[in-house]
Image (cartoon, rainbow, N blue to C red; front, side, top):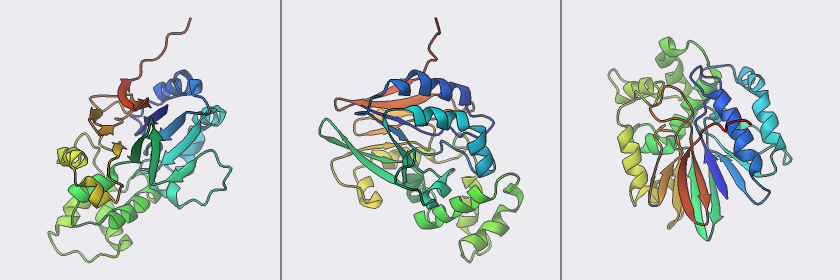
Length: 257
């Protein structure tokens, strides 16, 4: 069995933190060593709070993760991208990467956070590499950065911007929550298309699991894990993969006897 969950945004005031804690206790503690848990990005939110402060505040969550018997994978998202820059020892709690490929019942599943899809489908002419550079800057400049984002981030990615350059509007929109960003439908359209693997560099004939948009769904060979924030219309969802089947589940806190 594979469980995939994303976009908890711990450190953000709208994060459903307590429900996620309950999810780990109720659902993930029952996973065995043969199962796998995929934390599909933006579990932590470094854009809105000091990186170390977020980790310390959520130490109980790391304690639960450490107690699990299952294999844990951490796929970085745009809000926790700087985790990809850490040099961790092999015996760390989980492996951290940008992409992951697992098999279940002979079917290949490709996991990415999903910011790559938005960069390609919406943020052009920014490249994925330029967008990732912006993510590093936003992770390092938490708090009240919105007012001076243009002057700071232009220099960060070493781009020369002309007046009314489309990239200025693009980067400003990056800081908006997914619920208010326009063109998110283009991300889902791209994810469902047959040519997505060509642009993402993924192998053919596999299924794609991603998060990022905060809009959960399953559609044949592609699925979105959804999010755990209170300002989303659909909340507290995750993907369960078992016997070659994908299931979208909304977590309901178990009643204690």
